[in-house]
Image 1: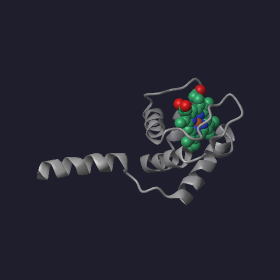
Image 2 (image 1 turned 90 degrees about the horizontal axis):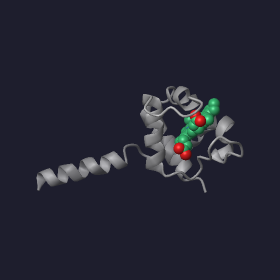
Image 3 (image 1 turned 180 degrees about the vertical axis):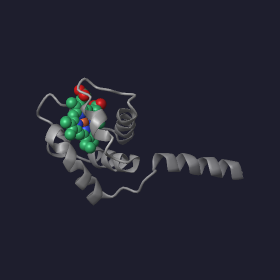
Image 4 (image 1 turned 90 degrees about the vertical axis):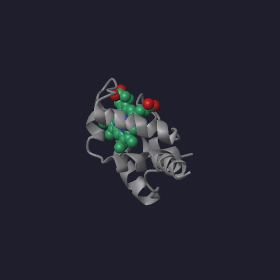
Length: 99
Ligand code: HEC
């Protein structure tokens, strides 16, 4: 029983690693606006990131940072290196909540 509780706890803490902070999320998101548009609603060939699934986006950002995903321009690899994993998760929360 103890083991089960512990593994449930681990699962829960994996999907909610950081507490969402809307103000911080918005601040961090400003550095994405030049390329991805205001609130991620890009009107150029750069992908729209508004409303992306939070977990998909967080994983994608971690992959860019780790160099597992490159992209055509390699801009994301450069950009994600300046953020901690916690900040990347805040960003993912923020953009997933944009309507
Ligand atoms: C210098 C321009 C630039 C900046 C700044 C930038 N991005 Fe990107 N981003 C791109 C490009 C271009 C792509 C598409 C992949 C490629 O071609 O390299 C991309 C792709 C992505 C993707 C993948 C989209 C998908 O549908 O899979 C995510 C998520 C993303 N960016 C998030 C962010 C976040 C969050 C920030 C701010 C912290 C940010 N980007 C800042 C240019 C940028």
